[in-house]
Length: 212
Image 1 (cartoon, rainbow, N blue to C red):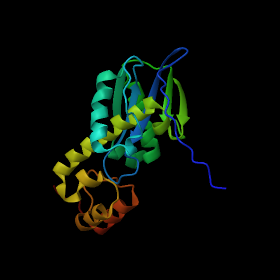
Image 2: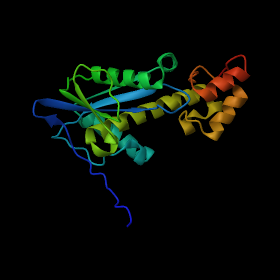
Image 3: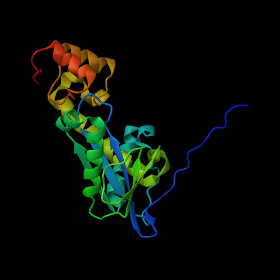
């Protein structure tokens, strides 16, 4: 018998019985370069935003449009990050948790509950729940995923202007064949994560970091 296809149904969660609920997500755990970015969002149920979804399923133009709508209509938003140095010092998982905690702490309004995409939770002083595939299932997390993704993509445009020979504007720091070839040819720059194996291999091959 063929497997039954399951369809994700997104739900809107803004309030619980006692107060505001924030959604949290990150962007940039997998890339070889740049910070990991997290966002926290509390939506306004009186100003709904159509089209919220997992940022990975949206086009760049859709993300940009929704990014502006979220900033204009949400009750409050916060974007934070953990730097390349912090990623190398504490590992990418702990750096991601740090960025998430910073995003929640940066909210202008304090939520009574935080919904986090995935299966792990940062250390917070409020009630929190991890939701696997939350970026596809819960609108507040979808909104956070869009803010984090757009913010990090814009950071990669800045990195590209500084080090154009790596192609950051295209691959956004991920280990594409073109990025790996550039690493092999030019070595690592200051924005690369030295604790990641391909970057460590490039550093071992060349004695000095590249210059812009």
